[in-house]
Image 1 (tube, rainbow, N blue to C red):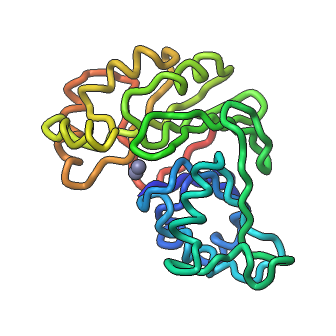
Image 2: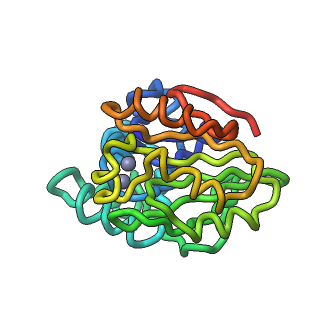
Length: 235
Ligand SMILES: [Zn+2]
Ligand SMILES: [Zn+2]
């Protein structure tokens, strides 16, 4: 369930924020940058919003318009969950949507981010997240893709790439149908990526995990590492 937390106050995706963090840490979160609306990326959002209900500063949901409208239509629609952009009141909401344009740098707290369209089964974006002198790339969910890498190659001081790999090679057909990567597709993506930057793999589906581990090891590519839950990085 994808979630990355940056400086304690900005999250990329919200798959497991309420499970992973105590209430005090949840209350520090100011904004969530969303890659897309799939459940493994937004599952904890309804409960996070509930835990922040009535807070002075609303929680910002940041993403290109297509992703936000998926959330509005399918999650915070007054059926699946209340529309927290009107609660407790329109004037003082718990949740605000902040649509951003793809490809344009925007400021969000202490970081600059750029949404980059990737290739998934629904509208989806990777993000380049930067601070002065350093940047990090998150792929979001994607099949083999191009624009993300073109942009990453132009990024200065790229310190790390977080790249999805969802299924083992035996599940290649499911991966293709659902627009995800398998280990066999990784060398092709690495060729497009900027050289020498470490690549942390995430989003492994549990039934595929042990095979993915073996298949990635067999690629014999020292840049590739499988990410564990609860890891912290300083860039
Ligand atoms: Zn997805
Ligand atoms: Zn996913």
